Length: 241
Image (cartoon, rainbow, N blue to C red):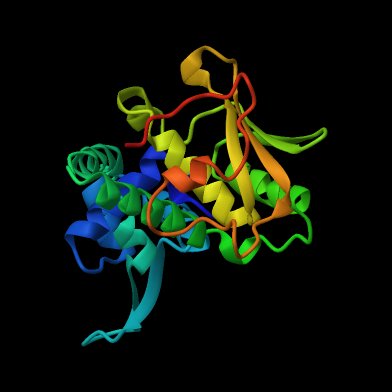
């Protein structure tokens, strides 16, 4: 199970919460606290162990045979708090409050580069179109459905915004997404259509030619990035200053 948040049963979540409060518990203790049979507890524990959420170890007892106790794994301890949306909004607002435009633009570039670093080792295509297709697969796996359309230039089509709460408040996040794509595909990318402008999807058009040493984006700011590819007449405009 790659993401326990997506597949947890409510009954299994109750086991996780009990183990969060106690370092480790046995089947009898869990059954008593949950008010269910030992068999029901074993079924839940089997599912959670298969998911990598809990672990089992054997402990010696003063009398009788050793007993099994269960505790959360590192993955299990990370499950629970999921207030990343509020944190993302606050951090984004603070970034936008930076008054020096060159510093603000530099920070946005660094955010985009950090986002790209999360995926970089899985993008290895030989051409811009191949790399863009790999990015589309990665984003789709993370719940952001994307496809690549092949025309005169390869185009990433996204039918869902990966940052809907932030983009509703500040569309400069679109610039960060575009910069991330540029980092991954190694070529200039233009946001040619945007859902925030009324389009039914967002379209990112990539240049066929990779960045040259002379034309590659520099860390001095994002204005140069906007000039690395000629914008189509209907290109979406994003203010990043």
